[in-house]
Image (tube, rainbow, N blue to C red; front, top):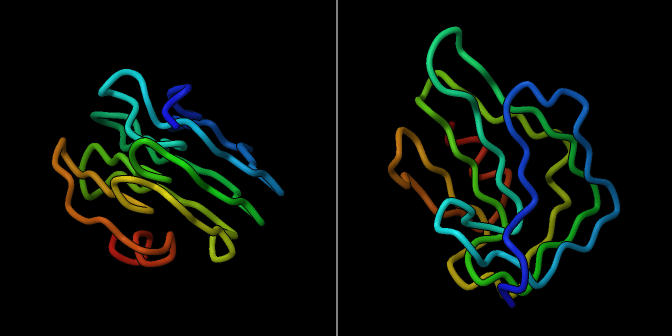
Length: 118
């Protein structure tokens, strides 16, 4: 657990896909990398969004979160399609965290709950 930092998806990374993956044993390292998978929007203007297709993916044995959605502001969105079938186990800090403007605003059991809260 915590053997590597994270997979990092940043805004304007259109076409990013994680399909049929088992992501396990990471979530460690720098405080800037807070999960097995970080999805981050860009900052400032124009508004940048982050995009990811995620299907049949398992997140397990994270030193921190399974997924971390990092939004610069409420107008910057993380768009993840197909995430309803993401599964989680042994994510020490929680399954899915959402940060807006540098502050964690929620930790969720499922990705669908976190996306609905945007």
